Image (cartoon, rainbow, N blue to C red):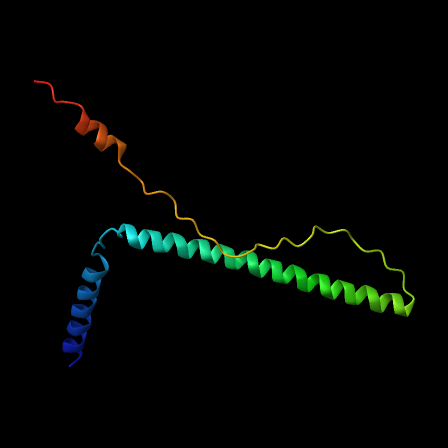
Length: 112
């Protein structure tokens, strides 16, 4: 019984290893474009999150200064850069990559 179980596990491992070593086809141009757009959207989302965090920190600091002034404590605010609004998401895809080497090779006639 243990021998059958061991052989079964070995067979499954061999099958999975063969599938893991298989080479995937190259992504199509459309898939590459979608991946580039997704990467740009993710970067934009990070900028929006940083902007929202900056605004939140400004509100907390303003609230703290207000309460400190009411309590009579001296407040010396630290100058920080203004929060940069990233604006709306705009994605402009890069121009399609052309193959100039292929075009020049086809344009030159072959020598005999």
